[in-house]
Length: 395
Ligand SMILES: Nc1ncnc2c1ncn2[C@@H]1O[C@H](COP(=O)(O)OP(=O)(O)OP(=O)(O)O)[C@@H](O)[C@H]1O
Ligand SMILES: [Mg+2]
Image (cartoon, rainbow, N blue to C red):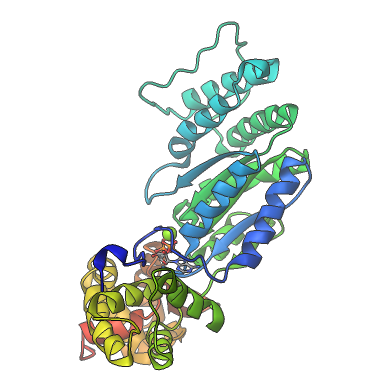
């Protein structure tokens, strides 16, 4: 069908034509944002789920919602291997600039600028072109300059929170891929937010990440489970999955046969990213509407080929031979969570010998541990891929 009118949006963080099945989470988080802007205490929402379930598009949506609600918001993606201070400083500076309208140039504002300056010096954050001088801004020795990240980040967020309270606004840091923040830095961030909440300051983090974020946060600070409210972002329910597939086509005047819909939902297992991929391939192979079961079968071949060459392959390629063997053994044991002991047995090693491999796979975001001693893939349908990629298990 007409390629120009193809409505689907397969990709990372690409806004879907229909943001299906997330209304409850959206309502809840917008409520958190509304409470914060009214200077009321709340919890920090954390969107947790596997690769491709739609965490980033949801976070972007909520970020826009926060801006519309008048909050001062910034959107940060935590990359692997970048220290938190370096990640935060440019964004906090951006927030301060957004709070620097003339009528707001109060003592609290210049104090916040001073404290950010101290933090940068203390954490050796060099940021080209950063201009933080303010005529008459007092120096604020002793704040955010101790060299202890727990203290310094708390002091910094507290001063920004005080400024937010003075301005009767909320400050929200949206942080994606939070599982990549190292545990000690995550602990400092949690402690800083905790302190701000204790002081009733309207500053919060709204985060997203892979399921390892639960454990990371719990290990970093045991009280994180009370500070954070975790939302599991999962595959779509039946009706939402149908909507995600059918509605974008309808908007373009096209339809699917009932068998075609059932087949797409079965193949994609209702995972949002896969629905976009299958929708896209169906649109490409179909000659005319309605899209039929035959079209879906052709689309399935194309979609799997494409996923194998890109989505799955980029992840596989990042792993060492031993890590690949580990994942292949996991796939041998099934599609769901498997016991680490059983994986080791299959590889004729002890769980202890394989512990470094397992933890490196968790660190890379390939697998996670749903409960103690278990391992599961963070990428949906990855077990199938592993069996296709390495047909015979090497012991
Ligand atoms: N609720 C939804 N309805 C329909 N499509 C969606 C929905 N959520 C996400 N998608 C689509 O799924 C794909 C993946 O979305 P996104 O990048 O937000 O996932 P993610 O969870 O952030 O993945 P990753 O963990 O790899 O970063 C995109 O193509 C997006 O358009
Ligand atoms: Mg994402």
